[in-house]
Image (cartoon, rainbow, N blue to C red):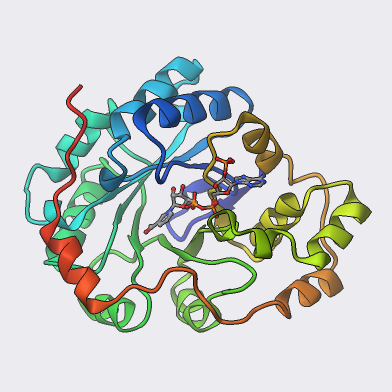
Length: 280
Ligand SMILES: NC(=O)c1ccc[n+]([C@@H]2O[C@H](COP(=O)([O-])OP(=O)(O)OC[C@H]3O[C@@H](n4cnc5c(N)ncnc54)[C@H](OP(=O)(O)O)[C@@H]3O)[C@@H](O)[C@H]2O)c1
């Protein structure tokens, strides 16, 4: 598995399994099957309400803790809960995570970030990150943080390549982890004729071409899936390389348009919502 080196020297696999909108049963299955077929990165979140299931999937895979790069996210309702990190670790059934994000710039997010810094110093999080902190939020964090984050997780795909944000990321060597890497399954993105043409050349599916583009952009990619065939295909993207010209052609598809438009009102709602965590 290809890996990238983070700004603190830790290595992270370039492809992982995403678990947004997967029920506990689906998440457990996807994580177990993904790890058994060669994945080593799992992305979940407090808000997905499937952390216990992901923990079970990891155990059932037979991999040791050290063989898995586990990423999760604190939800805003947890930012001022002093036990948020320990409770997250307990749900996952681990004594550290490889990557811990704050999920949204909502509520008292600085308190959330302070929790990440504390967890990082205590070895409970090997790397830390910010999710959905584009624009003014990352700028404000830059003036207040004590530890530079290793990652930002944001929407990114060929229709929205995060051109502006990447300038800031390059300055601090913060890596980008793409969410909605396949446009959340949007057929118009996946069926772009350019991907079909390149897929024919390389003997790959359109989705595989898109995912390879992400990794060649330097992004870590975490496609979500509950379909074992897709999970298998999404890992099988590292045995070919798009040329510079092909990368440029894909770059021309950038419309600077997102699928998900978050409003300030939603940020307020996020701050007021508490996940109904899985019991056991
Ligand atoms: N930080 C945040 O706020 C945030 C927000 C959203 C997502 N995320 C993270 O990012 C991950 C990825 O985002 P996402 O899962 O929403 O969207 P995505 O990965 O862009 O797309 C997932 C969709 O694509 C389909 N799919 C997967 N592999 C495919 C393939 N090879 N060919 C055709 N279709 C395929 C899946 O269906 P099947 O199940 O049928 O394969 C599913 O409907 C999430 O799972 C989560 O971990 C983070």
